[in-house]
Length: 470
Image (cartoon, rainbow, N blue to C red):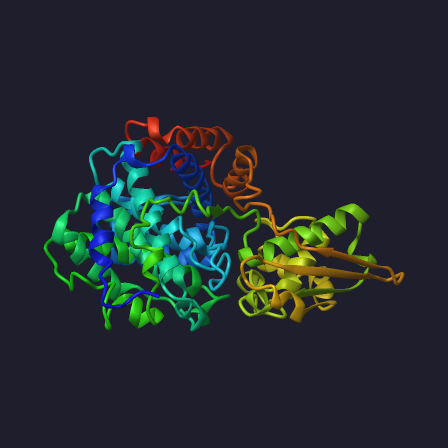
């Protein structure tokens, strides 16, 4: 463990200032473009959610300078900080955004951050305030924020999350701020002040999981990160070592940090490459995904119908059972953290996508009936294996008395060991945007993002994402 008198803030500042497009490995650029495509898709999908509509109305009411786009069926412009707030909230509204992974045995696998949306929402908002931003500069800013966010999340001790902080809100603020600072060209002392401002703005607590406020955490991360960078650009000052020391971010919100996980590690390697990022096939907590795939396999292999099922038991450890905390879902937000609902959705629809996460589907009689026949159970043997993987077991008892059992695949779909193909990722994007973009616009956005490093001006991509159905 590191001494808390050591100073990491200057190292983070130096990384933000010095990283160039040429420094970024080709694999990081390839995955980064995939994350941008996924992020734009979930922002557009989430723009239709009620929580985003409320935040959007808030932004329009309180922000009068039309400089950056809040995306949706009727895209509108508002101040950059409010566009970041709206798009950041939208990007997490369906819990469909990607997850940072950790392979450290004392960290909870898949519960570090949702890394893409804070730096992406910040980058999109600030890019529109500039006369011209190349795709290379945009990617550099996005990947700078992504890397800073991930390394801070890896370094802070597990108490940060375990005691109730929502790291996508708290640490996501640093990702957004770093991306914004890169686009603004902040240097030297201004960067350190930016990090100090960010440390005091970072917030979000897990009690709000399953409510509108969870996605607001990510929206506020983007909003506050952009605000911190803009304030620092105007000369606003803060403590220049705010990550460090007894009153710094690491100590106050995490009880300390492991220096060896961040010092000398920024970009060495880029976290987006190793250990990688998980792109979600389902719009719910990533901890549920291996279990959903196990249930789907049982349903498809045995051609199960809901009426065939007497009961289902999901066995898991506390890393899954505690965060996925709802035994019964009253609405689509609770449903994302309700394993009985999720398994019921798979049994009924043989998928869990946009149409399943609606209040109408959650409250429908078939879903409600099957959900009541599904429960979760703590398994001490699974718990003893640790939290480095998302382990679970699904047991389905049929009405004829037969029992079907499936262990979740540790090489889960969407993870670095079993990633979605570009075609599958494009299918997800099209599912996310089908009610907003025309097929031609969908194809154009996908093409622009996969060729982002060749794009002369990101305003073209933003314009394409605004091309909504008539």
